[in-house]
Amino acid sequence: MKSLSNGILWLMLFCGINAQAQIEVPESNGKQEEKEVEEAILPLEPVKTEVIAFANWSNTSRVLRPNSANDGLFGEPLGIREDEKNLNVWSYGLGFRSDLGKRFMWQGGISWIRNGETFTYEAPDTDSTFAYQTFYNYIAMPLKVLFKHGSRVRVYGGVGLTPQMFFSYRQEQQWTTETNTQMDETIKTKNGYNSFVLSGTVTAGVQLRFNKGSSIFVEPEYRIHLTNSYESIDSYEHFGRAFGVNMGFTYPIW
Image (cartoon, rainbow, N blue to C red; front, top):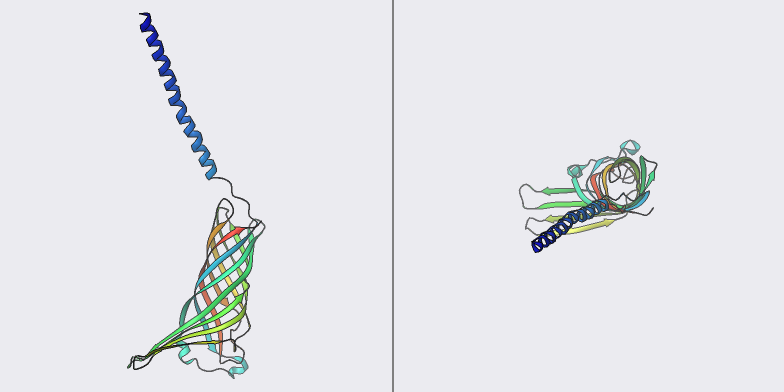
């Protein structure tokens, strides 16, 4: 009888220890999960100034008209240039953004900006064709004032001015003769164009910021020349247009 009592006592002690161990395991797992959640929702590092880098894809076009200077003295009919179409181009930029209070920020930097147009002609009764793509290349210093809202996910929008220094003109030509011979030529020049062009810009964007302060952003943008791209004695007046998207990332510096 005594041995039976001792056996029951040992069985009860074993069950108690086992039950206690089973209760403590979920408590440990719960603390670990709580710690992981706390690490995942750490507060954002404050960012007042950040460096930005981006690439821009744009669908570019132009307003082209006979030169109206001196009562049309230099103007000529548009001819085949009336049938020019839009051209897709890539541009690139570096810069920085800095806060202007709680609701505004400003952005400046330097960019490689391109505008252009394209033309294609197919002769109706032969196999001959002619096409070209024209590129106007600029070094620009865009300046924008932007309204902002949000922190981790930020939406923003604003306006700006973009001074552009003319760098080069390039036209890629391709044609096919009646004997189906394919030929091409590249024309480059720096003459005949205004050395300075001023553009106006309207932009809006969405920025996703990570815990350490860096971010990625997508930013639709519309850019329009406010001044003539060609010299005052050219046969035409040319005003570039571009509608595109900036895609890039930022890194905090302060």
